[in-house]
Image 1 (cartoon, rainbow, N blue to C red):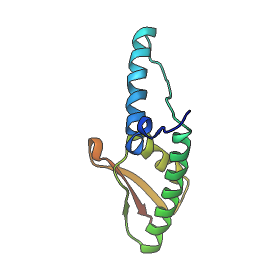
Image 2 (cartoon, rainbow, N blue to C red):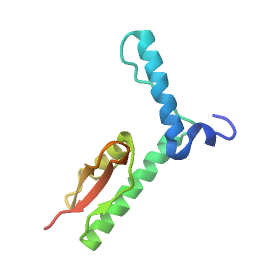
Image 3 (tube, one colour):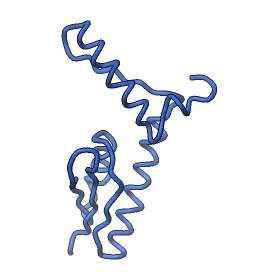
Length: 113
């Protein structure tokens, strides 16, 4: 916590994710087993998760209304997981991850009824 944490968070949380990755590597090496450490700044991760859940619901509704597949922007794995989990209990849509590497995206497909 503190003033002006934008630089620590970075664009779409990229700097924060990198800091978390490096911190996990160092801690895992020191502990000699995998360490699950979460690095956050000013509640960014909770805010981003809420945004992604809202986006998932809006885009699922849009896919149903338009009867077309909706493709989201490329996201890191933990963000794609939030979208998949948010929509997993909806009977009217299904989700898939497509693409490779940093270009991997979630697609939301309306189910034909």
